[in-house]
Amino acid sequence: MLRPQGQGRRIATCCPAWTIDCMSRTRTFLPLIATMGLSLSPQLAGAQTVEQIEPAALLVVTGSAQVVPEQRAAPQQDAAPPQNIPPQPSTPPAEAVTPRAPSSPATFTYPAHADGFGIKLGGYNASRWAEDWRGMRNPGKRDDPLDRLKYLPIDADGIAYVTLSGEIRLREQYVSQPGLLPGDHRREQLLRVFAGADVHVGPLRAFGELAHGGLAGYNIGAPAAKSRNDLFAQQYFVELSGSIARGLAGGVRYGRQEFSDGAPGLISVKDDNSIHTELNGGRAWLSFAQFRADIFDFKQTMLGMGGSGDDRIDHATRFSGVTFGVVLANSAKRKVFFDPFFWRERNDMLKWGKVSGLELRHYYGARLWGSTGRLTFDWLVNHQDGEYRDRPIDAWFLQAAQTYALSGKGLKPKPGIHFDYGSGGGAYGTGTIRNTRTITAGSIAYSYQLVLNLTNLFQVSPNFTISPSKSLDLTAEVQHSLRVDESDAVYRGAGTAYAGTQLVRGAHVGDAARLQATWKVTPRVSVIGRYEYFEPGAVLKAVGSKASHFLAGWVSLRF
Image (cartoon, rainbow, N blue to C red; front, side, top):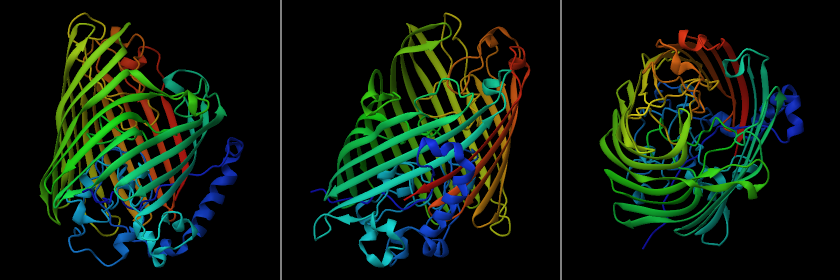
């Protein structure tokens, strides 16, 4: 018989903003929401314990850390000791904090930080269904009125209960040369509002989440549905999960859901966008103490911009496969995981070069990641084959990110470097397609302003992170980008080619300097700032691309 299984922990990244009208008054609301966050959880702010982990070397989305309710209770017998664990590459160094812990280790034996259930951003999870708030059943653990919403019992025994969740994020960003094209600047004010409910009845579960994305500003062009969406039924699924036998847990889930069990360079929920990336279909998993398997079959979501009725399942796509996990080491000072995967993707109308057609692509690869002492690492090897319009596919995707903590005292300096390689070639010819593709992963790791994609790209990015205080992290990074195949194009973040670059010889795509600051105001509130300067190389300059500045800042509130 299945017994309910703990799946998460408490976290904190947040977001402000209430309506589109308020976005024109950004400067007024940012301090207001920061102040509100401070008043919402004064006790937590004072009691916060952040256990830093070393960053993998990609800078992307952010939040703040918060004590896990279960960790403030009596310690569990088999709870893991403090350790350094690498975040997924879609997590910025500034936000890499203690991953969530299962509320019931006896029923979930595979290490929770490597279970494939969402990106860990501290106490809250990017995917809210991956949190476990049963600790809030104890009134002594509640620090403010919002904590009461995390555990609403349906029956007297507490077997049935509801957890409510929400997020508000107000973001403003500026781009001096949108798309690297000469012209006027762009200024955007973006609003995200999420509201979710998680209903548990023993091993049965139903989760639903609504989302709203608002967009205003200057010279915003044609808005994308990932930024402006009146109402989106972002997630709705049913699940049966829990302990099957001693040392064996499992579950099945069906519906619209977030999925990030795999190499972050290939799949993610794209938390940088106002609206998350969602998949439709089924997923089933089994986990032992040292091994796990996750099998899935999904179709993507075609977003509209109106109400929930215009966001439809995209039947022209299909993504299926299996991801495995093996624990190679799991001690206090050494945690290493090996995640092989075998996936298949179908897209009926994929465009390469000047034509569109059916592509069937297979992904074979493995991710080796973890930490040993002061060193963290995240390495990926992926070979892709298949067919595109009766043409063979032969592509490679390689990533290697590593960071070393020089000291755990003072500024806690952490130098790092990551290498990213995506093969290219064939899009404008008639032979083998050698261009790398990602499935749902974003391109924020290669450019904050989304001017580059990993396809046909080699990028080297050294970075350096310091922590002047417990609540403030600063990261600087420089990037050097080269084209792999000079006969193929340079590709934008959205995957489209820069017109004419396939006719230009040369390898230098461009160079960038990036800065990121994360201020953890309270356990619920964070303030993030980002800057990027991108200087086009000879290839992009030959087609008229211009240097561009990017500046963004946002406040996030979660409960």
